[in-house]
Length: 381
Image (cartoon, rainbow, N blue to C red; front, side, top):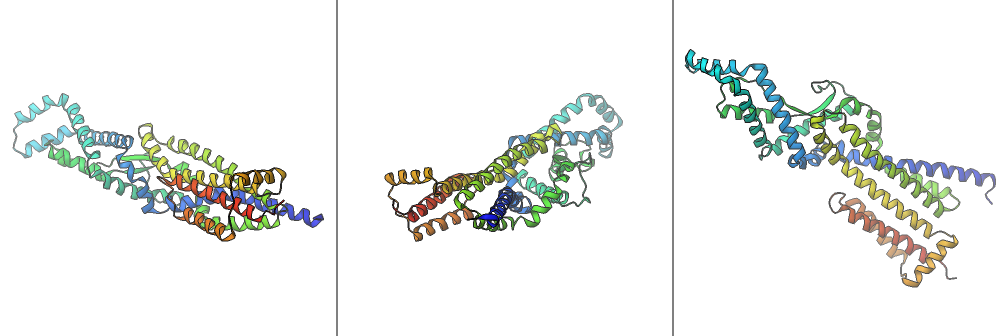
C-alpha cells in the first residue's frame, strides 16, 4: 500500500515528529525566559519576596558588616575620631585618653555595626532597597547574556553582584546618629552580594540569544510541525503517543538539568553568599520547573489518550470496558467546548500558587475530550 513513497513518507514523519520532541522542552524554556528572565519588571516582582527570606537577610548583614569594618579599618577611624575631637575643641588630654580606650573600641564598634545592619534588613526600608538593587542587577545579568561586556563586575572581576549602596549609606548614617566620632567622614559603603559567576553565564550566551529571538515562535512552530508529522504518519494515534512519550522523556531530563544548573550557578559564588544566591536562582527557576512539570503532565495524558483512541486490540478492549462503567454522551459540540476550556485554562491559569491543581484539571479535561471523541467515533461492534 505504501511502497517506496509510503516508506519515504514514514521516514519524513519520524524526522518531523522527532524534531517536535526536541522543540517541546526548548519551547517551554523559551517561554519561561521571555516571561520571567528578560522582562525587568517581572524579574523584580519574582525576586521581591526574597526581601523577607532569612538566608538572604543574613547574607546581606554579613557583607554589610564586613564591608563597613573594612572601610573603617582602611580609613583609620581612631585618627578620624581624633580629628573630629580637635574640631570640637577637645584638648590633647582628651585625645590621649581616647587613644587608651581604642584597644577595645573596634570590637564594640563591630557590635554596633552588626546591630545597625540587623535593624536595616529587618526594617520596612529594606524591601524597596532590595528591589532597587535587583533592578540594577537585572540589567547587568541581561548585558552578560546578550554579550555586552561593557559592564563593571564585582571586585574579583568575575561575579555579578547586588549593589547594596543604598543600605550602606543608611548604615553610615546610623553610625553618625549613634554618635561615633569621625563616622561622618567615612566614604560611601559600597557593599555587594555576589549572585552569579559571569564566566558561567557567558557560556549560556548563545542559547539565551537564540531562545530570546525565536522563543515566541517556537510553540507555534512546534504545533505546525506536529500537525505535519501526524498528517504524514501511517498510524496517527500511535505516532502521537510516541511523540508525547518522547517529549515527556526530554522534559524529565530538563527537570534534572534545572536541578544541576541551580547547584552549578550557586557554586560559582563565594561561600558566604552561596545560600542567598541559591535562593535567588531557585525562585527564578521555580516558574520554569512548574511549567516543565505541567507540560510533562499534559504529554503523559496525551500519550495515554492517543493510545486509547488507537485501533489496537488492547485499546479497543479498554474503551469497551470503560463504556460499561461510564455512559459516554460526548458530541462534537461538547467535545469542542471542553477543548476550548482546556486551552483557555492553560492561557490564563496561574503557574504559581494553586497552579498545579489548575494544570491537573486541564490535563484530565484534555484526556476526557480525547476519550469522549473516540467513543463518539467508535462504531458499535
